[in-house]
Image (cartoon, rainbow, N blue to C red):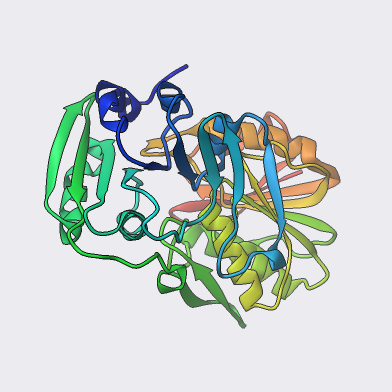
Length: 359
């Protein structure tokens, strides 16, 4: 059991959780909550890895994109006195006295979570934020100021815990106010893409993804998986280009699953969506995997995600199947790919990105 620095700081202040109706948003590990086994708490997870660790029974969750409406989706699991929700957002109004947010990486994501929290606690409710000093906790205090005066509760382990009492009344969170739709263009194809703060490359076409779409090996057929799908950019483009494809999309993020469903709907498309930690729990074989995979865990470069993905991708691909992957040129992926695939080609390159095909 390894507690993150944020959780270690919270353990120092465990008494603050004794009073009130608490909601935790995006805990950084699955173990801090063990110290609160006796207390009824609600936990909102936008990331499937920690949700899965907390509930210990769900390896992945799959959805038909047509079943995800603008109102969102959720997977709920009760563990003792704790109720865990895997969901992109919660639109409850005045249901809690206290909300604790684990600081996300993106400023706009944090602003969205603050607005969500304000609706749930209402006037005179409390919003608390814990985060690493190098992760922007100091600037987070400034972003909290529109809701009320902030003060620091404690600092330790290079982290800080800050809190504010909400001064004004707030209505329930409205996801449509935060959902952004942009039109992307590749060659003669233009198509709408929907996104929310916290989704990879929110509001813009990532340069690596653009290279993949422009230079991917054509002639795909059969079952295709868009791994780490983000807003569904790759899948929606491929389905426009090759309408006969049977697409699947996967991501660890509930925000990405939701955004992808909205993107597919905006293009008159449908597909199977998997919420999963890597490829774990996704069953069946596919002919092709296309991906612009993550190489960060929080603030750190993390190759273990991609190492495990490459190994699992080889097992998931059918005979003569291909993996097409774009990545930053500085990442050591040709060697990692060669450990599991007999043939690895660099099919396109820019000063920043490389596109690989492995078979």
